[in-house]
Image (cartoon, helix red, strand yellow):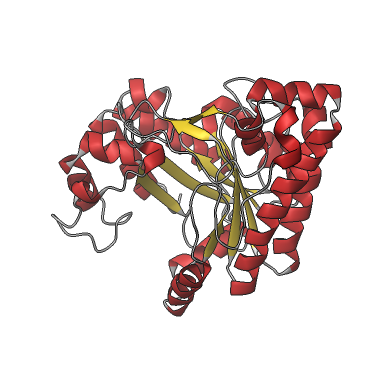
Length: 348
């Protein structure tokens, strides 16, 4: 079966041929590793089918204004951004609603013409998705990372949002509805085009705790998730949700929102915790460690870790995918080991 069918079968526990796996280089990693990337891709033809030595040109990396240390752009919602490393998306340093007094005049951007950060051309997006369909490849609609909770923190500031939730400020509900309506427009556009899957990505976790309490998530965020995800589910599109950080305290409520696939980090949440809570229920797209083993371990440590993940989370019915995003600082031999382990355990 081709990649699309294999991916869909894995997501639906319908006996895929292999575990869908992929290694991607962040723009910062492209600038950091340069020519090493081409060598690694050539060395692993299973992951990078058809790649020929010299095909990859690191100089073509796209560094947008939000990933440029010399820029402090203002996005469509009025948030000013700053990064400290080229190729890494920065953080909001100025919040347009730092003071609620400005809320009466605050308006959302037009979702027909803008994303959360820049302008958008829906006609071009539709043409590209149709071309992808014609090649029988997986079609995906992506919401902006941080489409709801995180954008609340960008607009108001993190501490303000947590206080707003604690104080049950009525203006917060209106701001949430504004963001939900904006996201809904994008979801419906993708559904009308006819994508296989819609991604709802944002980080809800820190190192060892969620960024908000379970009660706050259930009251303020989950209802919008449910409404936005139900639009995709009713049309048969897969619902993919991503969150970095520790989210085990929120996971049951996240599942209840209607997800099919959860992209979740491994060591932060614990492999055994993930196996106990998610295995066989929700397709796990496992984000392989970039804090500990891949940074500080040996290639054997990397291989052993990925093997453990596959043993504890995998099943011949499906329900497991593997991914790793490379950032600066990972030893090249360990990146090589990640790729090698992904290839080795594809059918494990």
